[in-house]
Image (tube, rainbow, N blue to C red):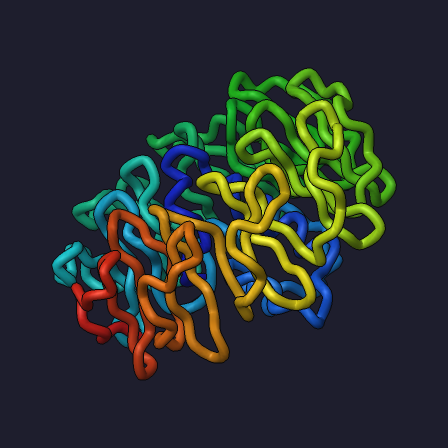
Length: 375
């Protein structure tokens, strides 16, 4: 299978895919020290990207939508799972609602899911019927009513009827968030709006989606932030960045990570080896090779102690102790023991876990709801 595991956090329902976009942009553009365990949402992403210094943000964002491993979380009531060499969708009782007949799949967004048959991508509804026939070389899920698709070597945008709103013309692109999409023209990144107008002319070396009104952009290997008028509100000066989440953004200065506010003021001094954005009030950071969590004052709420970690989702976070994964709450208490070979974040009250090489789903109390059976 080409692309399997959705990397999106369930917070996408409110935030689009900005959270893990930010994680990917930072990690793949600036790398992670080999002494630090690669953040869970990125392990396979980095492994299948040519170089941690890759500046192809469009491809990075693409991987966030699809992913690579063995399962997808529940989104819009369905989860994508493997059955042999094919993929389908199950409900929360573990029954196949859409038979496993696709070569590759994405999760459902806005009522449709991108699926692949014979190397072509189209879109199905929740009954498994094709609403847009497979004819694209690659397709993103729908966000804000539009999907980014590739035909040959060029990218364009379609609506839910399958009609082109922007004909394929871009070297690369990102999906629409907050009414704008980043596109690449002549190796430079700019932004278009939904009317088809070039809102911000292509001029940046790399760019991110807009979130919380700002987008991270790169000029001469330094990152800053622009507003929707294209004004540099925070001049390019950082070695690495995240998007703004909950009003703060991680930034890298002299190989250390701290946080700035939307005025560009340092509010948590650079001191960490790596840092996530804030989600549910806490941010994962690395200190002396271990993962812990800080609050917005920069104080540790959960001291560094984990070998790997992820963001909080539905009040719980995946953490790794030794070679096994489990879950903690916001006090740092282990609420589901570290006993899984792999696991996912909670979405719609369930999380995927791998036991003896098979995937199933547990609830927030750690009870097996759908027995491990999927490839």
